[in-house]
Length: 339
Ligand SMILES: [Zn+2]
View 1: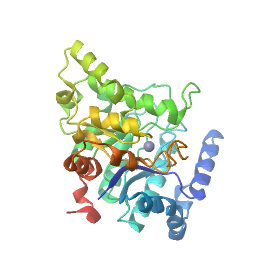
View 2: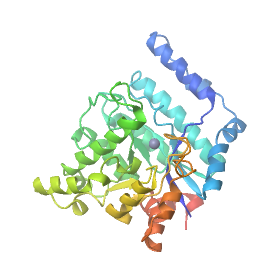
View 3: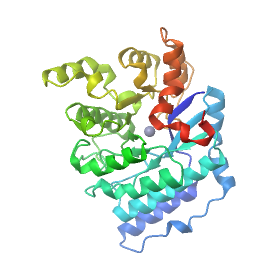
View 4: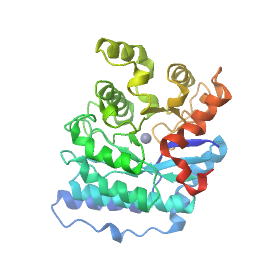
């Protein structure tokens, strides 16, 4: 089985986006916020909306996608805690319905109702609802709800600890995932995403977070940002800071996905990062949608790159495509994936 641990609902029905527009407009005009309960989207519309993902799963030979709301659409910097709560709940409920329609193809991961300056404890109720009531297996945690201004404390600050206690209690991981950038210095998918991935790793490296939470698990997407490419730098910094070796310090808790859109990047990732810490992912349909003229294949058809890696034994290949996702997301509790 091939599990893609990183897919977003980028093809959500237009009625969802129309609600968001009404919601943002009402907030800005200081008017009564629209009721998310008024959004009515039929099952046929939902089925139609994921046909492209289902076709790509078939064509590319992947089986199931761990599926979450559109990342750039989370927009935590917009509105206030109430706006974020209504929006997250609506987006998560749609993910749950897609997963219920196609339980063999999609497993849910939730968006959190984060807001800059609002303590992450505020997201615990929605996380708990999604895991316990909707059967979700994790969340996307935004390390920078301000959208590019980094106004909240680092991920290793005690500010986040009550939320981590909930993750540990529910035994689900968080993917570190920013949303849109509202700082014109940072292009969303080209720099904000990768900078956030790299920043989160560096925060983990300089802290004792995983001493405090030995079973807490983070997936750093987009191949870990700049981290694998600069692994020597991070090992050296850790050594200079008298920190333990990286394997001991954080590789029981930090994992990287394969959303790297060329073969040399995946080749390097698999050479530098232990196979136990790599989870297959494509982020389709997402950040980069075109065909690579050098190969004739879609940039985000990442399975091809993993398939092409030489010197990857069957056991390591299994870990990357299936075993690690099962372990990190505890997928045996998902009925369609129970072994
Ligand atoms: Zn993503």
